[in-house]
Image (tube, rainbow over the protein chains, first blue to last red):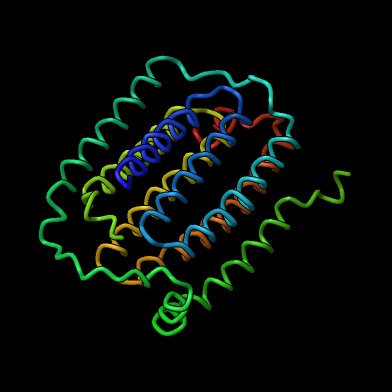
Length: 167
Length: 105
């Protein structure tokens, strides 16, 4: 049962990941990317990281992809206007992506063997344990990330604001 | 119910490597800046998946906390990146990255 769930989710994630970069219409790309994110959330549930799955769906499918959709709607890009790269460049892109995959697989194949699997603990992904880890071991990065968010917000508003002289 | 009794950790590594490479290929393959952004999101998610798998395998919560930080960085990056994209679109009326070649010479 778990095996089937894993392979189904993995196949669906890879298929929709490929469709993200292959579909011509940007709106379809966004929808396929949302499908990929839901598959990854399913993987998190399989890995017993329930809180992570919930946060992933809320943040990615709920916030980031809606932002993408809004921008596409505002730019009115739902036509197939994109001129394609010439065939040599696309061929080179596919070849280099495949070579990177080959390198990654070859180097990661033996990386697991020295790792000893720890005794399984089903409570790792629960919100209480994650909160303990976050606020005890990673308190400083947590505070710094709030500053990062504030900076990003100010920067986004600054950039997207229309110049007064222009208008 | 332990997932690693039926699925070896290697399968998760292969899956996330494959998703990462799809993202890299997408960045090289497309000219629309929005699709390039989406490919970057795909790469970040591949890394997140691998971190979560190792976190469960090693029974250590730190891996999942790293995923939260990556999500924070991704959200900030998307907000700023899409704002830059809006500005580019306002000035050039397209999101084609080949229009932005002024730094070439």
